[in-house]
Amino acid sequence: MLPDPPAPLETPAPPPAPGLGAESPAPAAPLEPVPEAPNARRPLLVALATTLLVTALSYLAPKDHAGTAVGLAFLAVTWWLVLRGDEHVIRAHGLSLGGLLEPLPLDRRRLLRDAASASLWVLLLAAIIFPPFWFGFKLFWRVKMPFVFRGFESPLNEISGHFLAVALPEEAFFRGYLQTRLDAAWPPRWRVFGAELGPSLIVSSAIFAIGHFLTVPSVDRLAVFFPSLVFGWLRARTGGVGAGVVFHALCNIFSATLQRGYGFSR
Image (tube, rainbow, N blue to C red; front, top):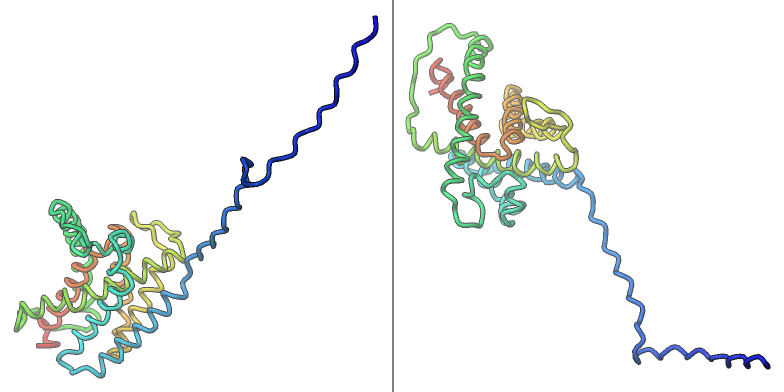
């Protein structure tokens, strides 16, 4: 029996021409630029420029309105850098104030909850800090006369000024913008009484103190470095600036009350 003849060789079909059923290779995905890592240069330059601006205003503005001009400058810078953003940007910088500064409908429950929490922190710190501060005030100034309470001449104007023209603008800029941006560049590395802190606390407080010294060149103005540490701790511990605003204002009011009560000012 003769063997079967070999099967004829099949010629492979040529590949289809592009566009006629062939699958073209997927184009390579475009390379996306790697986002720049946070660095401290920009917030430090902003702090320098803002310090120069408010220092100039403190000398050039009319004396009766210099404080208000400085406060408005801090608020304007903070608005440009943070507050004109969306709610996510505002929250990340701790500037929500219970939703008051967010571009969203106000949630009253959230506002009351945040206000109650901030008030508790303020009362706790006032109970801890104000008594030894009073004692230290008497020792430092060698006070001999008894304390005599003297109220503000215009309570509404002076108290609202401490809150709205001083504490709110300074906390919004130094703790809301500056400390937050420096935290992004220099991550917190210390845990202090439940707050995650880092070099940003020291640097922002130093800039805060230098700014106070430049507007009124007196060495004792540098002492605001120490309460600034407390304000910064509050920012880190509570996640916002609300408690810091209230405590900052109360510190100023308490200090002014002691000065009046011991005859240092009217």
